[in-house]
Amino acid sequence: MKFDLEKVEELVSRGLTFRQLATALDINLKTLQRHKKVNEELQSAIDLGRAKGLAVVSNSLIESASGGNFTAQIFYLKNRSSEDWRDRFENRVDIKVAMRQITDRVIESTSDE
Image: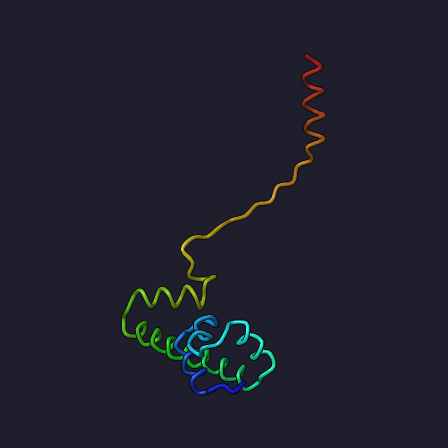
């Protein structure tokens, strides 16, 4: 099967899912999945399309954040440095208790009464 690799790259760069891509190419989803496993050029077009789409959106986000868009700034910081910019912090404490010992002590203390 011959694919229009430029078309594949363009469609993927616009965020189409594999199902949507298969529909746009007028083929079955399973056919697309099978061909991308064995056709390196097809897989490369898909990978390049994803990278281009991500680059466009990332650049727009950076420009918005740099231009004073507070929502974009928050989104960027939470996703690029989530450890430093999360909304809530959690402290986790693990307590291990030997239930058998507690149960035995409760039984002993109630039998003394």
